[in-house]
Length: 151
Image (cartoon, rainbow, N blue to C red; front, side, top):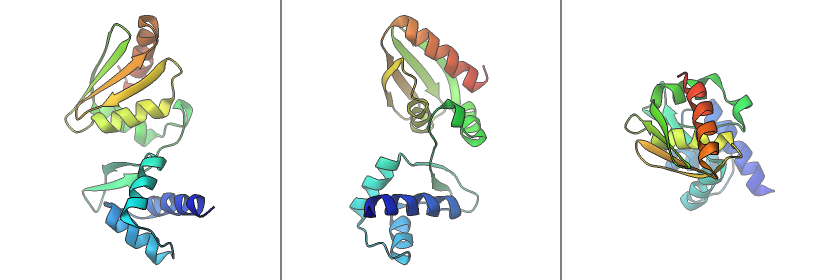
């Protein structure tokens, strides 16, 4: 129960404030009467699948995403479109090339889409590999991602 309350508070905090670091998040949680360690916050960030986006006041801030393509916000679509350089298939793998530093964000978005054809994905600094069951599945996913990217 405490974990769920803490997760809800974290989501509320990152929506209301530009929180750039886990240390800042720890301080905000402490101010809201949640006693946490940095390790706990690190785990929470991973479990909530938070990622960083450009902030207005600070360089970067934590953000959360919804579930499924239909719930993909305009901001997320814009982030995905702006960061994608190319999408191609190699056998049953979809290779998504991004601008430097955008691989992790693109990977989070691809995972969040929960395409049933995608078994899993690995994101680097500027590339995401999405493993599909078949080459045909990879082509279908490539087409969907290209439409999402506005290509």
